[in-house]
Image (cartoon, rainbow, N blue to C red; front, top):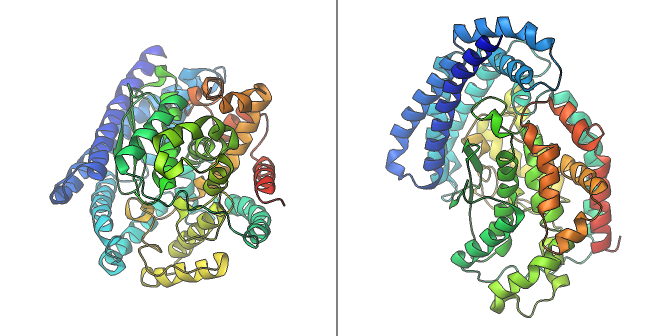
Length: 501
């Protein structure tokens, strides 16, 4: 089987190369590309995506998998080669259902819609992008239908991002979580709000960039294999295990936006940088799912980056970087400011306690759109109504309403948001496991020592890439199945202390 295995790796490697080339074009479009390049960029990305799809679904790949899968199923479950065959088979079975022409149409449309969104949001102009979003919804439904009948039309789209998850399973998690979060939000927001005025001063962009980069270097982001650039909506992208990039944005009147976006994307990046180098250019060479990926961005951003221990070390550095803004502000005031709980409009700016309510709103709206119960033309008002009912606030416009998230304008509708809450849940569960294995980690964080935590995560989680199914990976890393209990305990402990609950 070694000859067939080598042949398979060579063939799927071509598809990987084409996908990474498309990712380079996407990164460029989101960072430096002039607006005039949008039409050609859509065509170029469509071409590369079609070619990648054709290579990954070629008949010869199917024939090789027919020979290799029986062999792989008889191997040791820990075999990298067996895992490669089985993961490739899963990807192949999904991809072969979708015509290459559809993939080209989808990527061309997404590139056009993303460019339109970058102009529509600052102009508060939902009407200009609504027709494009209508087509996105149509394409999303068509995409789901390629996978045949399912309990819910969104199930195949969710499964592509978070393998094994369905609408029913997500609701089983979201229901109990919401029951815990709503009263916690109510209890906290009935108290006087924390003073966050120290964050809402003038912080020059260049100084924010320098300070953020100094922190993520210490956390473990390798600038020999990565870089940071500006964009409209922060993201991480990967072109190889040796080239994993992050982007961020800054507001000069709010330190927290750029700072925590930078740490968040670094969490994604260190995960990808920690994948076993032997998996390079194969389907194993990425994070296991959207939820596991988000667990690492939220672990580093929140469980570490918003912890008191982290700022016991980092706050003197912040005061040195911003003496006029923070020189006379004590650590406790700053710590309370970065963990202020409030009912807010913007998901990416929201606190840990309310964040998942934002996700649940989007998840429900996605389902309603796909089910045909909600029309695109009615989406802005539906958005406002959910914010009124769930968070007690309403955006003054669509810029901070339905236009705020890039996901529906830079991809499909469906499967986009559940990973954020799954990641939050997992972030606490994974950190608990790390501390059980290394009880000194909290103390080390307070001293600016992140190596033990980073190395434990790399050895127990990052290195495996997509080798294991998500449930298997979670059990290997934490010794448990996915559970909301560690996350609820984390929130109640942290915010109980902050708000004297």
